[in-house]
Image (cartoon, rainbow, N blue to C red; front, top):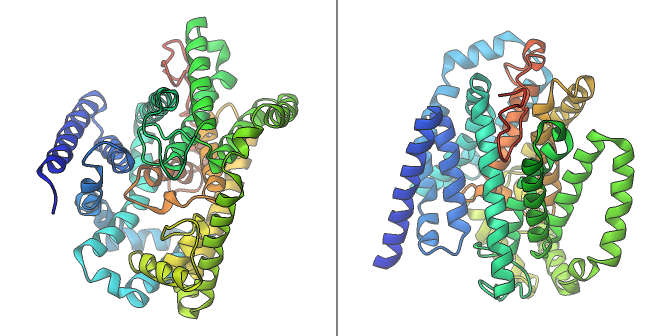
Length: 458
């Protein structure tokens, strides 16, 4: 039974969200941007300690699905599919076609039981609709109005900075201490690992102007962004999230490498020295128990997949997978961490949809990254807008090898990741990613945090 207090908190959050969306729409007149902000803010709320988050989480799919349904219907209109199929037989479209065939088999045939409830239909709808929205409609809106993309970057960076400030204050004030992660900062989130994702996403956004737009900034702008970067780096360190450490290390090294190879070598050496002499206590703070727990979860997931050929090939479903994994895990004996997922995005994806959907998806992702590298190397200045989504996509992929939050459509990580992955997809190998658009000069320029009015992109 839902208490009246929690219901009031949840309704208040929805009202505040509607007001925020109205302000955003009045500023940029973009329904797509409003929806993106809504998905992210509700996803953050669902993971936060703010009362009502758990209540709203239970209804997230039913809330999101009606907003995404028009985009799903429009995208799969028969006349559009015919035109797309007849226009060309590119390798990327072949991969997507193979993926869709096996995805449909997994969801509609093998795991049809998960579609027998409104919640199950809504979850699949949000998963599919979220990908379509962020890989097609949202970047299409960005292409028409680059201010939309700049707004999302500023919004994400500011959320990361505010989260970092709250996290540091809570850490030293002993507020919101998670019993399962003593000594780690969670900020206003329920767990430090959930908090770490907002830092790993915002770090490359904040670091980018310091490396690539220093000459366009005033001294006060430079100082503000430098302080912001320090806040987010430090806030990440005190989360004790090893997956987060990996993500910001990779994103920092990618950006530094793109700026200067000499600076990359120096930064790499400096990072290892700082890590060895100053950060070793943070890196080893969780001890071996946490590592053994993660290995136990991964082992359970592998054994579960080995137990069923159909499950391995086409998955166990997006809802049934949790009960299946929990049952199988307990059969293998007690583990140190009582969760219903393996903390590895690839394993968790196979558990839901099967290896036959993963293979074409990975092939498509590799194709995307390779093409993005070629485009950036060909003309880095004209394609600067690809650097941040390229960096975030790669760093979050590696972070997801130790976490699987990115595969939970009720949380903010899924939507932010899809926003960056979708932007990269649309620009690099999407329908409108031809040579003319790649060299159109719509690259992201301008200070992200403060919005330098003297920047070339404004």
